[in-house]
Image (cartoon, rainbow, N blue to C red; front, side):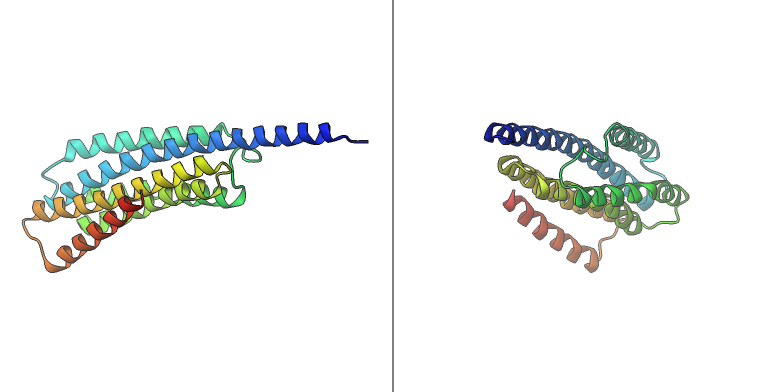
Length: 207
């Protein structure tokens, strides 16, 4: 017959297992945050490259692409080493976010090709890059939502809001840089800037 001690041992093993999953989930968040940071830099360089008609930031854009590729490889290598059956918190919900993020990343070569050919406007490029970044941010949010430790969950939520505010600031910067590089700033762009500023202030207030 099982005793109370057996159940206490099982409970402790379960707790250790959940904390190990949480630690691995936090590792994934760290890798994803680095990739987001690199993609933001690539987006900004691409915007100026496009707005200048390909006359500025060509070499810097290539370097930013290389930086993003290195960060993406780190994420993919980490996922390859992780057991999908027992590796992360949250089960299906978080794995779905990982799948969506990987699908979005698969579209990067096509985005870069269109930027290189100059077939995108800066606004088009920003939108496409922002969609990829949004998929990665959703992964971070899901990791915060499914975290089993309340304190860690709180820190992950704070991190998400900081990253979200930074992303909105990055979109503001990219929009402004593209407008200045093009030598014009219209009413639509001004309204978009106002919106981005308002939303990033809300995110940073939550942080």
